[in-house]
Amino acid sequence: MAWTRHGAALLVLTTGALHLYLWFDYFHRVHVVGVLFLANAAAGTVLGIALLVTDALLVLAAAFSFAAGTLAAFAVSTRWTLFGYHERFWGTWQEAAGAVELAALLLLLYAAAGRKAQPGSSPRGSPYLAYARERDPPHRSR
Image (cartoon, rainbow, N blue to C red; front, side, top):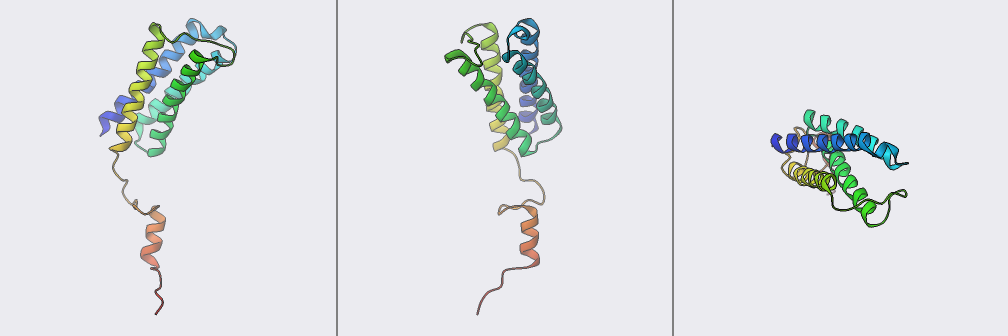
């Protein structure tokens, strides 16, 4: 289902765009966390484009990890501190970013669950192993 992957790509790109906007707005002044906002914007852009181009499981997993990590870092920064920075849990930008990241997580899970097996793949392992089994079946002892 390409629409789930494309929707997730747009949400991941939106997460990156939100972090880039917030970096320009305020976070460029915050030590360490500001650099992480910029890195988040770059990673969101790369992963969003990758999701638009391919449905590889590795890309889906990387995008899921990105969204989960971003949400987890936000939760840590609101509960305790993240590199000395303490964030409020509620607010316009916090709610927007949290909603986008949560929606991305759900769509990425749905995209991964609905992903069809790639041609040449084997349910028992890699395509190479399937070829090796066909070519050289196991010998049975008599």
